[in-house]
Each structure stands twice: as structure tokens, then as C-alpha cells.
Amino acid sequence: MNRARSAARRGRLARSLRLSVELLAAHRLRTALGVSGLMVGVATVVVMVAIGADAKRRVMARVQAMGTDLLLVSAAPAPPIAGRQRQVAVHTTLRAADAAAIAAASPYASAAAAVVFGTVVAHAEGLNTTATLTGTTTDGMDIRNMRVGSGRPFDELEDRERRRVVLLGPTVARNLFGPADPVGRPVRIRGVPFDVIGVLRPRGTDVGGADLDNVVVVPLETAMRRVLNVAYVHALAVRARSGEHLDDLEADVRRILDERHPVRSGMPAPFVLQNQAVLLRTARGTARAMERLIASVAVLALVLGGAGIVSVMLASVRERVHEIGLRRAVGARRRDIQLQFVLESGILAATGGGAGVIVGLLAAGAAALLGPWDLVLSWRAAALGVACSALLGLALGVVPAARAARLEPMAALRA
Image (cartoon, rainbow, N blue to C red; front, side, top):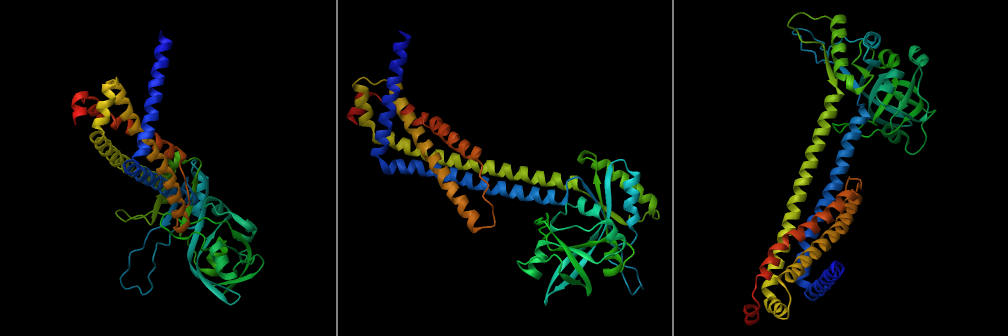
């Protein structure tokens, strides 16, 4: 008995599904209108998810390039002093010895390095380019995620002896030497001759959009004495033993520097601390806000597409009143009429969702080719879009299905 009922139920479902497909194929314009709404909505979702995923990846990559367990101590801007002809832009209290003191005194610091920087013009083989000079130690290169792609890095002996060796960023190497390998060639930086010993790996841009590859890196002592001629440093880069201890490290560094460089009461500190954990949290917050925006647009697009399907199905009920009456007259039950219209709505939605995924993938690929984005596809988002559109179609098909099922056979035949 149960098997017979199940077989009969499956038979009715198969007949309703076959009939729904035939009716949708017979009314191509109406079917195309029902499909197009969800197709556009799902395609929009796929494109936005792809672009949003690439934007999130770029932001996080920029933060990673700067170091996620990094604490940066920068010299604070110096106030102007009345009557002094020569003014300085920043305080000149930080010293290279401060980095060694932090590494030795703080249990939360795994390494610390001094950094000097400035804007310089580099000359080579009749060409010149403006770049950012970074002078630091071998530990400083490691802390700032500076890796050598070709050639070799400088060592501590070259730093102590103030050797005139330089590492070029990819942008500088390309501007001065084109596709040729610059390792072993001479370069002049602010008129000082240097030997190129390596080229850094590409690092992209930072969060502010500055090119991290437009840089020349020289040993700290060389930069301070031979190029910039300063006795102070511009910044201290401190790496935490763990990203969880960045706040503790910040408190330790502030205490150590306050002891080494005391200031008068009421005066501002001559240095500024930048905690990368704060920047990372900000970047993650921005990524979450972007994800919420994409989800809102996705819901809106699906709802608008679903409204189109409801409109098409209600119009279909009005057009097929005589057909519905005839089916009821020859024995079709209310549930059979309801099932047919729900299946038609589900087929429209699933077809629109599938077509939307294809169109969205093509549009995302075109955006990646024509624009500055990389193609980052989320197959989970695509599958979820198809599933949600199909479920939405089934759910929204209940309204026109119920209206069709309520029609009385004789009244429908007379209509």
C-alpha cells in the first residue's frame, strides 16, 4: 500500500515537472522575463563577491607586507623654535642604541632595529630616478619583511665598516636598468657611489598606497654617515615574540624610551608609537564592513529578481485560467495545480541562478582583464546564489500557486 502510494506520488511529480518544462518552453518570452531578473541579481552578486574578495586580499596583503607583529616607533614632529634659522622636521632624540636597549630589556621583543630614511635621487648609466632611501640593519630587513630576490643581502660586517653596498627595490631596478640584471653594477645615490649587491622581492604597496618597491636599502651606518650625515635615527622597528603581546610590548617600549629620553612635565613625548595590531584590526573591520555590504546587495538583488518571478507567475495564472479549469474538470486536484506552479517558479529561479553564475563569471573575468583587479572567484558564493535563488523561487511560487488552486472548475471554464 505504502509503496503504491509512493510510486503514485512520484509519478504525479514527474508528470507535473514534465508539464512545467513544456509550458515554460512554449511561453519563451514570459520565461525569459522571469529568468532575467534573477540572472542579473546573481551575476551582480558573483561580480561583487569576486571584486570584494580581491580588495580584501589586497588590504590584508599590504598589512602583511608591513608585518603583523610589528611595533614602529617614529620620531614625533618637532615644533618650530622662534629665532632659530635652521629648523628640524622631527625630534632628533632617537638613537640606534635605543633599539639594542629595547631588545635586551623587554621580554616581549624578539628583535629591534633602527631605521633612517629619506628621499634620494639614484643615478645609473645615464638614467636617474627618485626613490626612498632606507638605512637599517640585517635585523631591520627581517623585521620589515624585506627579502632578497636576486643577489645577496648585506651583512653586519658591511654595516659596521660602512660599506657602500645597496639593495634595489624592483621599481628602482626597472627604472634604472630595465630588464637587465643590476647586480654587480654601480649606482650613485646623492652623488655617493654604491655597488648593487641584490634586488629585493616585490612587496606591492602599503595601506596608504605608497610603492614599497620604489626603495633603495643600504646598511644603517652607511646611510647615517655617508648619505644623510645624521647622528640620530628616524624610527625603531620592534618585532613582538607573538602578535598577542603587542600591547604589552608597546607599554614596555614606552617605559624604556621614557627612561632613556626623559621629558619635562607637560611636554609631549618626542616619539610616536604605531601598533600594527591596531592597523590589522582596522583592516579586518573594513573587510567585514565590505562583506556586510556585499551581503546586503546580494539580498536586495535576489529579492528584486524574486519579485519579477512572482509578477510573471501571477500573469501566467491569469492567462491560463481556462487551462486550470479544464485540468480541474478532468480530475486534477488542488495540490496538483499548486505543485505545477511551484515547480514552474522553482525552474525559473534555478535557471536564472545558473545563468547568473555564468554571466557573473564572464563579467568578473572581463573586469580582471580590463581593470586593476585580480580574478578571485568564490565557488561557494556561486553555489549559494544558485541554491538561494531556487529556494526563493519555490517559496515565492506558493502565492500564485495558491491563487491558481483556488479557482473553481466551472468558473474557470466559463472564463
